[in-house]
Length: 210
Length: 210
DNA sequence: CCATAATGTGAGCAAATACTCAGCTTTCAT
DNA sequence: ATGAAAGCTGAGTATTTGCTCACATTATGG
Image (cartoon, rainbow over all chains, first blue to last red; front, side, top):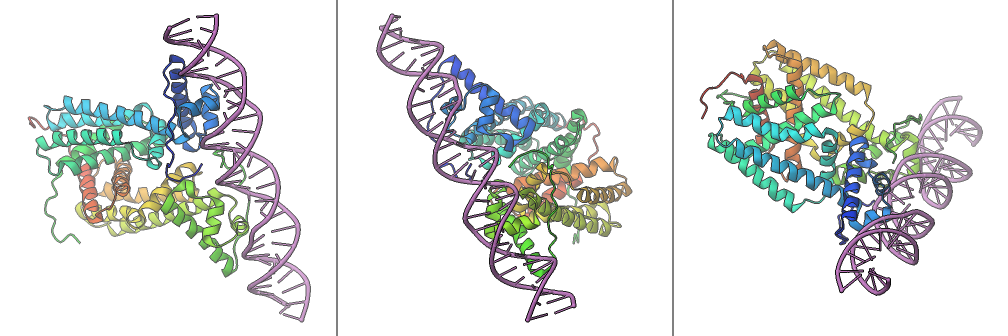
């Protein structure tokens, strides 16, 4: 339960038989469902094991700690998001800005749209977890691809622009998700407006801005 | 540590002497410092008491639970933010959009700028806490004032616009805060660009944008 | 078959946590 | 000065948590 840094990433068994692979999946699935329904604090190892229908001992044969389960879920989500964004970037390669942006925004929103509560909880968990190098590397590639996309259209400082677009999108989606029900169609349109506005806005010289 | 709803908002003493008022402030201050340095999970009642230099018994004379301490901190932050935004709205009343928006954005960012990590932690705590009616009421007034500000300048659907602007701002600031060091001047400019872009973007068909 | 490895079990331990209580000290009004 | 009220104390309780371990069950290869 300590909040201390992970000083013991003890090695665990790797599941080789189909039975044990199913066990691992059941544990991850149970964790996701608890996260989704009750949030990060409700995820305890005993509860996960119970919900997964396996014993607590089995859980600890494949995951060295509670955080390791969360880390694996975070990892899968991030890699999935990266893959989706890479695909969208490739497809948007030759489109005009006004068509490329909606495509990229749709890809960025997809994960929140399909699993809003789970995604929010996983992002919260991610903040307290050590950075996953693979995730960082993939994210880097994605940002690069998206920045290229913008650079080709003459957007200034495309790296900052990508960071801002991602952040704006997350902000708007997270706020929507925290509310009751969401019209994702309207939401995507608003995000497209925010993105296109940001990208095309020309800060004309308003002097004496004090 | 339960995530269950608060079924026992047991009444506690109200501090009347200066000594006890100082105790209460010390408890809140200690909680803020722990939150800022180590995040939400590190906030335990025993640690707060120790850091505040008071006994655990004293803590429980003025706060019925751990969450009550967090709730009070959240409350103060939210009311302070609302007050600042109301003031900015009033001052921006008669300014043109290009001047009003920076003023409003500066007010919105101020809290994150002065206490970035604490603010992030408090927002995380807020998500798990019961809604404070006072905070909700003040927030409603603020949104109304800001929406009025926009409506006067002919912005369509000003309520949605305010919600989106707030969400975008939060998204960009939170992302910046999670990084190493932040240039808040540049940050404010980017947020102004996002806001102005959103507000002035005309989704007319831009043909042949290759 | 059977030896060996892989997998599964769950009672229970050590540590942490939220919170109480019985008694002590300080403040204050008179 | 004095009694009552306000404030303070911290060892202790009940519970929860992450996690281990000695042992039982199942699969696999020869």
